[in-house]
Every structure is written in structure tokens, then in C-alpha cells.
Image (tube, rainbow, N blue to C red; front, side, top):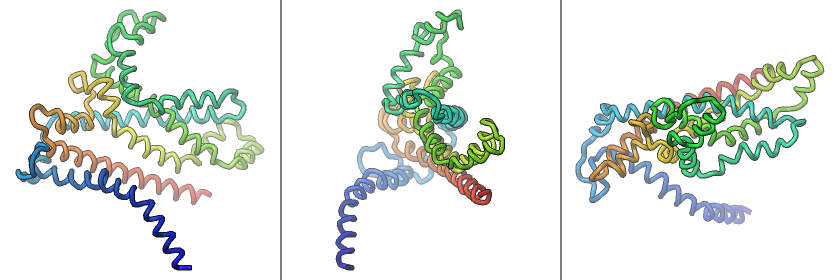
Length: 303
């Protein structure tokens, strides 16, 4: 019996081996080497020779462009989270109504942006918002909301607004599906008992639905924040970090130093920037993870 179990385990490890090798080569090794590169002044060509210690980190902390990209990324994460969570929850509650006709069609339409390549989305939206004669301006002038064309991607505030709105639209379907899964996991008996006690729709939402969704809501919050970290494909195709670095993000900052720094790349500088931002996000994840555990404990106590 033990010999048979050992054979099954051996086959299981054998099937897992390609995945473990791929994880080690394409994930674990790059992470380890990024910490090594951050200690060197290295262009990516030739051996690692010029050890500079923490000089790259010191240089980055004094770089205004780094703090600009850092602040923009946190600003983007904050607003994409603040906007996406309530809007997707409202949409999930709407398409979860049993009496709503065509709700499957609505779910599909809301989910369509998710399956579209982000870079393609950025290029299409650039065509819609990109200049004074773009489609969005033509529509607004046709219905009389504006008299003159607006340079949506030419101003720092409007460009960031377009980027945030585009990001919310792109992940809308994913977050909505998470909320929908949470809503469909709630027991119907509780709502039937509340209805017998005279609770209306809004009362059930306020005192039953929202409190019961808190545990899964913290998970959705964490996933939304993680999704907002990497905005390279959307920002590079839609705004390119402009105008005047107003929509510059950490992904773009790291990419410039790693591949577009002019002359030779500065992989040590780029690696150090990635480590600083990664540790910041790790700290945010720990805080959100702690909030998730606290919410779960409170829910168990309530039950």
C-alpha cells in the first residue's frame, strides 16, 4: 500500500516538475537577481564588476522623477479602487436580480472589456480621446455639452482622469464577477426571514447584504489594489506617461531606466526602483491582509 502511494506521489511530483522549473527560471531567479543587480552599476552588458552597494537606492530616493511616478501610481491605485468597488458592487446587485430580463446579456457586455487586450484598449481609447477632433469631443459637441473641443490627453488632470476611467472600465467585469460570486453565496433563508419580519429591499441591503459581503469585500479590495499596480500597457499606449510626466507610473519609470535610458541601460537603478516600490506594495498587502482577517473574525463572532 505504501509503495503504491509512493508511486502516486512520484507521478504527482513528476507532473509538477515542469511548472516548478518554469517558476524557478522565470519568477524566482529574476526576483533574486533583481536584488543583486540593485547593488551594482550595471548596463546589462558584460559581467557584474562595479559594486556600488546602496548607491542606487540613495540616488532613487533623491530623484524627483521617481517620487512623481511613485505618487502617480498610488494616486491611480487609490482612485481606481474607490471608483471600481462601489460601481461594480451596484452592477453585480443589479444583474443578480432574478426578475431582470436579459441579465446574462448584461453580464456579458460588462465583462467584454476584460477579454480585450489592454494595449489594444489603450490604442482605441487614444483614438477616441487623443486630439481635439477625436470621437469623444465630436459626440459631446453634437449633443451640446461642450462648445469647444477639449484636449483630454493634453492636460495633466484630464489625462489622469481618462487613464483612471479607462482602468476602471477595463477591470469592471472582473470585479463585478467577484461581487456576483459573493452575492450568490449568501443564504436565501436569511433574506426570507428578514422579509417575514418586514424588512424592505434597502433594509436588507444595508443590514444583511453589505455586512455579509465584508469578508469577500476585503479580498476584492486586495485584488483591485494589486490590479492597479501594473498599468504599463494601458499607460504606455494611452498617454505614454504624459503630458510632462503627469501620468508617469512606476512601470514606465522602471522600463525607461532598464531599456530606454539613452545610451546604455541602467539595470541597477531600475532594479532598485522596483524593489522600493515592491516593498511598499508588500506593506500595503500586509495591511489589507490583516484587515481581511479582522473582518473574518468579526463575521464569525456575529454568526
